[in-house]
Length: 421
Image (tube, rainbow, N blue to C red; front, side):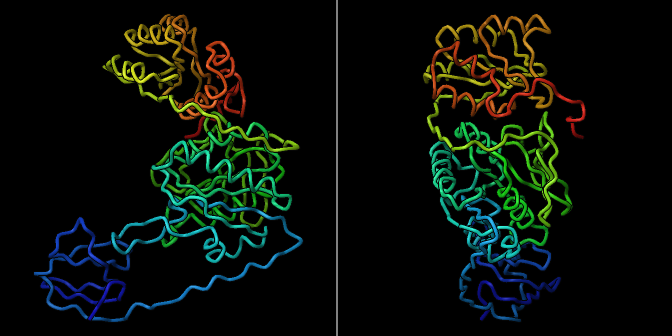
């Protein structure tokens, strides 16, 4: 009798199907059989239409033995910290989808080539999909990274992370480390390791190579194109996920990538980067009472009353164009700043910068006490405000720090070439 995982042939009244028999997901009705086709897609077949299920090949039961990683004294050592996400995912035969499963050690087994560039220390610190990442997880990541960076033999750290909120985490970690003695590289994958088109291995190899470089920044390493050409190394405070599924979904905004990283070990520097500090410093104090609000036509200004009542300390508004918000919101901002609630202005456009003086409405915002965040990305302004409010609640000092370039989040000049199609 065929069981889940077995290769089978299903004959129906209308067709013949070949594939792997899968346990029935809860979302399917009990009268359906689920089959994974050679194409990788799952289909549900009504039991009433099935004439015969023929077993072709039983699923193999294998015991995986972890290979001991040999130390190469000629190579630097990189710590890979695993947190979950698609880069740590494989097929879930209970649902037909993917789930976080692989640890960092598994990456070494699946792609031994990374051992050509570095000795690998591997540790799983979280098992979480990126949409579930919260404040406490950021702090856990930062502390675990600090532990690894403090080890003399470690040249750099690679943190595997789900892609959906990777840019939030990268930015937060950048601010949590006022000083960095070694590189920290965040890496993810758009497609899980079981897929032929997976970007996992090229991204992982490239991130390990990047973690051996003499760069004192938090960065993101992901596919630069939809092909397997090379990866871009992005500054943490200037990168954003710009596509739901493409392998080259991550782009540097208002900034050129720091470097191109090739899987043969070559690194081509494209723009300036921060040199390593002598010692790594960590500050995990953040203010969780910060919100990110999207401005849209017809927005009800009373939405902001919620944050006032909940005693929030800061709100980042994603305005339109140069940072515009409706006039009724301007009055609400004036009320909020009088209650010592910090209001920051960013732009939905992402590219370009906000400006407080071009139009009269923008000047009203300035007079109301709003802080214009230059060319800072909304998500970056959000995490930066949490970081700044963790240091001080004094409005003038907050304004000063929000408009100070702490981690490369603000560019005084933006080249037209930085606007990518």
